[in-house]
Image (cartoon, rainbow, N blue to C red; front, top):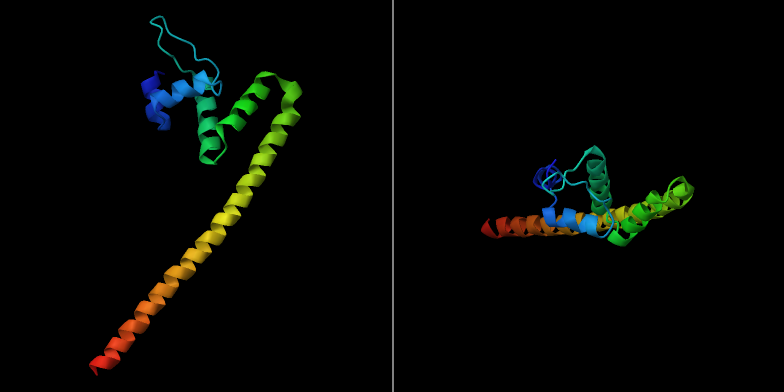
Amino acid sequence: MTIAEVSKKYDITPDTLRYYERVGLLPPVKRNHSGNRDYNENDCSWIQFIKFMRSAGLPIEVLIEYVSLFQQGDKTIEQRKKLLVEQRSKIVKKIKELHTTLEYLDYKINSYENSRIRIEENLKKFDE
């Protein structure tokens, strides 16, 4: 796949894909005879993984560390697992915080709605 096709498929800019490769998040992508990147299924799997992890809020530095550990082979399995478990814990904490925030926003929205209803009821009494 070309960089344009991968960019469209994963909704990631070509510049971002090049950046991921440059910083070591994405293993070097093979080039075709013209020198253009030619993404294969393995490259796309990495891109999908990176996209999931970024959307979950993982910092680039953590992902670079993970990829570095992955490239060192099976001897780093426990380190990689530990890194992912730590990140999962952070995500769970963030979800709880967001849930609390959502509840508070719902409360505030409801209080405005209730206030509006009281105002309308008072206006109706005034009209009577």
